[in-house]
Image (cartoon, rainbow, N blue to C red):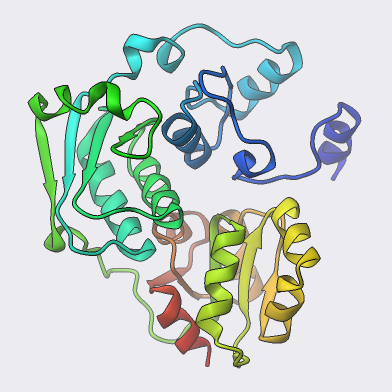
Length: 292
């Protein structure tokens, strides 16, 4: 809290979140110095902003002086795709997107993928896909056909690149950390957007859960949800909000939690390593069923 107070006195925004693009959308071509891996890949891919994957101290120093170094993804020629990834699936939901991202990330080894999908991707699935790619790789940017601002520039040349094909069999995950009796059900890694809160409300179908579902989000999103009555409705249905925290770095074992169910591939990857708990990955609908 001492550090938080110092940052606030410096004028830092009071939203501590891994989704800063929700607070203020980056502009196309804008130079940034961001540290959070899922935010970096989102800014480069969705908005066409320019940021490397920085460490926290360097990002803070760049914020203080308003400048960053001209290298890496700040230079246009370093932002060209070097690998074609074809998604040959008939349907891609957020959970499948998470699994695909974990699989794709393991194959990239620093490459910038041009992602071509057989079916359209909604924004929640794109967010899950990018977060998972950044989890299992050091890749800070992708180009998604039909979504990324510069996709048209590379659409024809991408077909000539080395290719990885992802099909139904690729959307699998290891089960070595599975658990059957959850102590806690969790949504919001990266922090849940308003769209994700609305999906959770639809999945609950006006029925209160017996086990609380914990949701991490930003203060900005929570305030919007409060203003439209969504937050209070979710609370009545058994949702507990934990804004502005990082769930995967929380000392869950000290809280008596040993097993977590989540719909996030990123959380599934980090929770055993950082929070030392077992994890079960489930769709949002299955997570709600388990809460009942």
